[in-house]
Image (cartoon, rainbow, N blue to C red; front, side, top):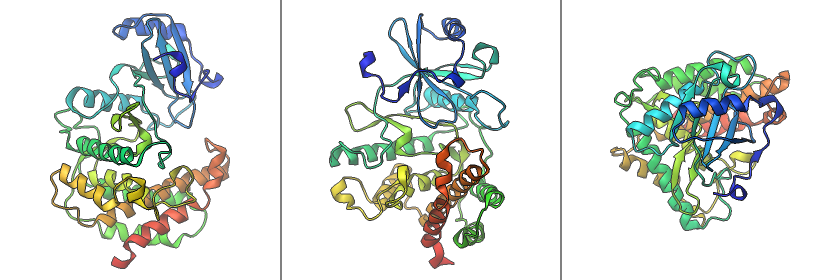
Length: 356
C-alpha cells in the first residue's frame, strides 16, 4: 500500500495526544519482530475513547497503536490490556478474524500511557449502514459474512482460549438489566414511561436457558473491516466492551439496525426499507442463519433480546445526554441526544408490550 492509499480519516497527531516517538521506536525495536526505523505516525480521527494511531516503519510495514488517553481516568475505563488480551486469545486459539497482535506495553514511562500494537489491515470500514456504492448482491454477502463471524465468536471455547476469567460466568442479562437500570436512574432528566415499563418487565421475563460465551459488546458492521475488494469481513475491531456474556445479547444488539428508521443519524437503519431490493436479508432470515451456524433449532423469545438491547442503548444514550447537559461530555453532539433515549425505549417496549 502506498501512502496515497492510506485511509482518508488519518490526520497529524493531535497535540493533546502527542507522545515521544523516539521512545516508541526503541520499544518497537525491542518488542516487535521485523520492525525497523524510522517511524511515521498519524492519528485516526473520530470518537474512539482510546486514541488510535497509524504507524509506518522504515520498511513500509504498517501497524495500529491504541493507547489509553492522557489524564486521570476511571479505574474500569480504557482498559487496553483487555482489548489486547481478547485479540491475542482469538488470534492464537480461534478462526475469528482479528488483526495480528504484536505487543502490549503497560509501562507508562514509554509513551505516557499503556498501549498495544497490532497489524494494520487495509480494507473498508462501512460506517454508513446504507453501504453506498456497494451492489445489492455484495451487501448480502457482507451481511452473511458478518453473521458467520459472530457465530464464530460465540463458538469459541473461551476457557481453552485462556479467557475463563475474562468476565463473570452466568446471569449476564440479569446483571446488565440491574446495572443499566441504576445508571439510567442516575442520569434521568425526564419521565420516560416506556423506560420505566422496561425496567420492570425485562427482569421479570428473562428467557430460560442461561449461556456464557465471549461477547463483543458492540458488534455491528461499522466495527469490522471488510476486504478491500471482496464482500467478506477480514477483521473485527473495537473489543473495548468485550466480556463473557450471553451470546443472544450480542445478536440482539447486532439486529437493532432492522428496527431503526429515518432520524437516527449515524445509527439510521433499515426499518421500512425494501430489503430484497437493497440486497440484505430480513431480520428473521439473519437470525435463522445464526441459529443454523450455532446449532440451534430456533431462538424463542427473540423480541426479548432486541428489547433488552434497545433498553441498554437507551440507558447509555441517556447518560451521554446528561453529561452533555452537565457540560462534561466528550463531544458537543451529546446535547443532541435529548430525544434519542425516548425513541429507543419506545421501540423496545413496542416489541414486548403485547406480552405484558
